[in-house]
Image 1 (cartoon, each protein chain N blue to C red):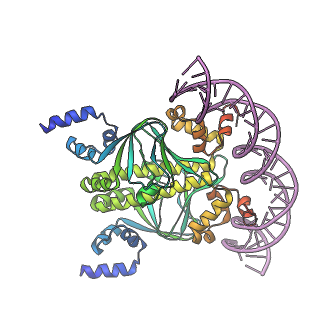
Image 2 (cartoon, rainbow over the protein chains, first blue to last red):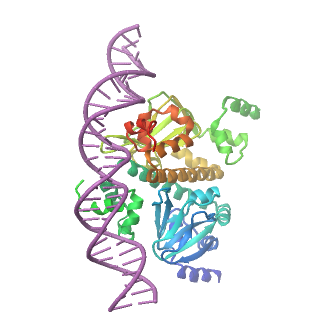
Length: 202
Length: 202
DNA sequence: TAAATTATGTGATTCAAGTCACAGCCCGGC
DNA sequence: GCCGGGCTGTGACTTGAATCACATAATTTA
């Protein structure tokens, strides 16, 4: 009887989150049901803010659908992009979330977005109740660390053209979804330089 | 009798590693003794390579004393610094270690260095036998992630002068220990520009 | 100790990317 | 449909950092 409930449940939730966890470790229906209850679903429209500067950040977000940008405004008053997150990615301002500080960033939707929201308390409960979830988050964290490392090396070593081409190669599907102005702010280029890149050689 | 052994042991090992773990979770002498046996101590002279490009990387290193640099050579043939690690820091080429690939980086000692070496197998054993160690590594990983995020934002938003000043502020003790040429390669500046920074205003 | 090597400071020059300015375009709302 | 705002392309100009070139200082090593 409960089994039936799970079936209904999983039918409705063709759930990226479960897939994402199961890429790391296989789990039972019962476990996933319990895990899922630690999350709140939230829906945002294009342009909505998930986190505003100066907010305290009490959750991590698993993006079920849509696309968000994590951005930071320098003293120069310009927007810079720390990262993007699309379906199947985790995102938050970890600095604010994990160290319990006010956010210095903004998390905003580039598209209508559905996110599963995991509060700090629920995150801790989850890891306590399902120890393998700690391992899961560690895996995600290390992969994020590796991605950041690569990004740093790209910023240090690549020419504007190479940066753009590497982004194209790494995230081909994102290039169409992100305004060039924003992409430029991610790559560390001016909008104009990025635009001119299409014609130039080097 | 065994208790006595632990005492001797901990007497010899005024051990940064234990302190580092205990910043996250308190552990017993017995546990630390067992944990410690997963590590091999290695000593390096200044200039020695811990990892060379093209190596496969089978361990993470906890720096007990000394200073190392993780660097990458761009196609331009120039050295770029991914990160430094000094006493009390963990370091490796995580890309190569965690994803089991050939290293594209080099890990080299800027000073004579003593490191505790944790092989992938021992790392897995350690987490399996002491589940709280997974939490410990997760904590380290998230903090590393946050540091990388900040570094990315610095590279994107700061002027050369500001980059240097921020480094001074974050790691005052490191500035004296690192050759300016290497520091420039970390900050993403030319050696000359860094040198000139001391006089210029902006 | 002296020689060799590596680190550092500084001037002159170059050039790639930023900035400013403007025009056309696309998209969404009324 | 029309209007307004954000997005994008492109030219002209400016500039700050890289590059090149050299001299001096500091370290290593033989």
